[in-house]
Image 1 (cartoon, rainbow, N blue to C red):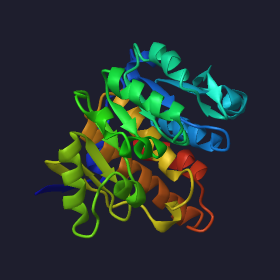
Image 2 (image 1 turned 45 degrees about the vertical axis):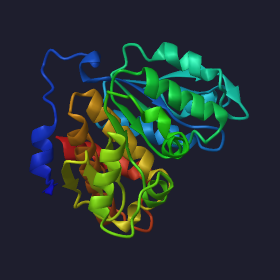
Image 3 (image 1 turned 30 degrees about the vertical axis):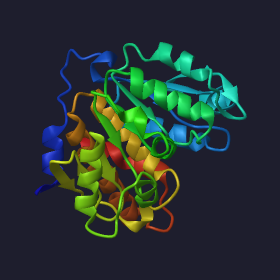
Length: 282
């Protein structure tokens, strides 16, 4: 079993160079499909995690009923309102999102989208039609757990980022060895699995990283959305999928460790992690 442990030096060595003649398109065009009524923070945290980790162009497509909220929260991303049903994506939104896929390097889907018929339609559209990497988080994983057929035949990289509950709902067994369980899920579904928790596991079924950073203060709503945004950003900047997921986990945890030291575990917030993240990428 090939298991690697990252440190700051290794992470910095894998981050892409930023040449002097770069432009905003040089560092990835990413599309985020996140949020619903009552879960507007999920979209904002994912977007800011992506932006603070170096993404060049961030696009978001959100249900129309939360568009104005996200437009006030966020000034940097390009935000598109799509058709809405009861505060989440309508089934008809899938055709609108299909038109946004061309030219995007990476897509993130899942944080805060719910598990409606519209969410299922959007997840299916992205995984069947997008030819680049896709990061599936949170509700996106819950949708896939009941529709695993969506992954069949997909040839482009897919990264799943479950916590223990999502991992079990997807069919994973955590009664034995977490590393073996994560590797088995990755093999069975031809994807990369980032199993969150103490010593997060990142694997493609063959290679495996174990993340040493992070602390209990990060166990708060929104933290995982920041992580998914970071991973999507790194993919857009050209990191290979397994390395992007592993570096994202390390950076996310290390940002949390800085916050725990400076603020304390009880009061630290996902927004604090976003603020300190750039210190780790100099």
